[in-house]
Image 1 (cartoon, rainbow, N blue to C red):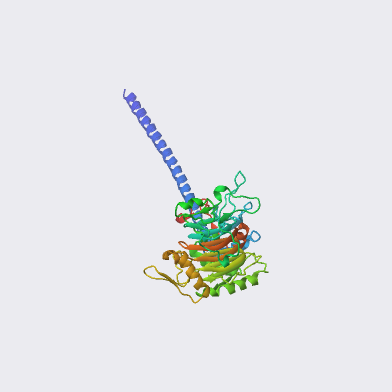
Image 2: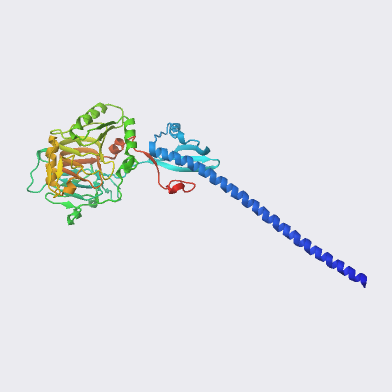
Length: 467
């Protein structure tokens, strides 16, 4: 019996040992599994950290390149991609990253892809030029008034299924008034003999604007967006357009970066001069620039005027040119009394800041505290124009914000752009503007800046919430 009891105790011990061994083995397997997962987690974390580091280094180079393009601009040519990269040399190899440029082969707009790589990671952005999206014969970020007879050749918009076009005559950030001569008003000499009275819109040839995109204002009537007569304004006249940023639309950079555009203007052979506050000092340098550049091989004639500009020259200003002219007038009035035949190009007027829109002094205009307006100027043309303004624009606050006054007969081909927020442009006489998209493009040739396209950043969202 004693033997049997001892055997039983041995068996129980062996069973206990087996159980303990099994538990130990299971525990070991669990530990090994956990360890393996921990190693995998560590490896994945290390790989993620490495990826994030590479992406951050790639973004550092790309951010640098974008900042340089925004500040200095960049010239890109499909014939010499290396020259484009060379302009970004200060950002090349930042944080060990490499910059690349590729043109989009199938893009009519000349879009480029700028990207940076580090290790196996790549980040990039699309670059495109400003398109001059405001396609219209007359564009202003303020309001405008048109008196007398106007014959417009608008911009063609979308062609509809019925073959008619959605035309664009005027785009304004404020109100628009169209008022042909009234019965008690005589035709001025500067308007030319037998000039028409009324506002008409038509396209060349057999093309036609759709009726709802064709404004017609007949003799002795008014179309004013501020009252019920505004119903006479059709869809080709857009008023009170919000969030207009014309400088960015046409040059590709915000207004605050106008110096970048002017520097590029000069690098490309443009003429830059100041009138030093005297509007009579504008015409002769402008005429000289046009005369000296007409036979050149440049795509356009570029003239940048700092200050007021009076183009009045008796009967007709002679600024005819086969090469499109881009006339930029900065921080100054633009005046013309008389006529201008066959101006071929774009007139772009702007102020350095939106608040620089008080032109009373440049017009020789004094406004008393009671609102009484008077005129006094040593410039004979301005002395005659100022009373015309004060008699036509009777609101003193509106009169002091007139940047653009034409009184006479004007035949132009291209576009008029007045980028003076809260300004009030006035055309009085016989106005025949013809929109030309081709001339518009040629006038701005070489000046539209390359800029990153919003929401085109890829791989991950860029730092600082850009894009």
